[in-house]
Image 1 (spheres, rainbow, N blue to C red):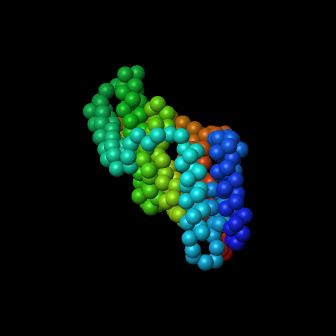
Image 2 (spheres, helix red, strand yellow):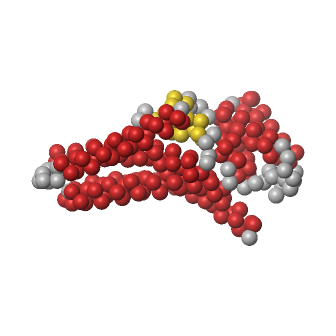
Image 3 (cartoon, one colour):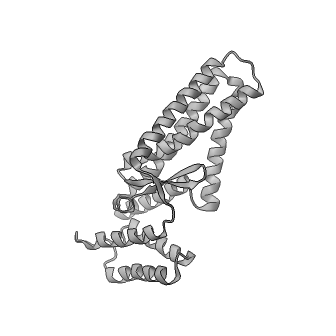
Length: 243
């Protein structure tokens, strides 16, 4: 691990200086994310336990707060109540619709009903998966913000995030993906049980989710799959170094 902490803290100060003078530019963000990657890889750690590493985390967190433009509109507590409740209710409604329409013949209105009733299950299931990721990883959230007009994003508590081990960060994102996959497979099984002729509806959702996540990862370099693979790569690098 690097012992030249003066040089590394100087780089952080340079980012803060550029942020003050030039604002939120692409170059500033690239420099910031490079520093974050090095923090995750433990490059700022020393052989002794002292306050230096914590100071670096504080400095990086301060920069991240300045770069984070979204306003938190839901606390973690409210989200932890609202989203799992929405998931449970929407799942119950989806099952009820399937059970009480199983005698109906295949028709466009039936397919549309199944399609529309599946949407909230997937929506709240994703957010519930993110909450479970926080529970299993031990990484805290600052709350939820409006990512898009119809989508919530979670604001990770960056001190908690950087203090966590690499495998805990893998768990944070991996749990969301795993839970979402389980939910979507469960939807396929429910429709198969009651409306096998409409099985293409949940299969299409599963296919689009898989392909969409892959495209977002490859092209936009973002999304839950991208974050999971990024943290997995770091975790494997660190394990190899220690072997």
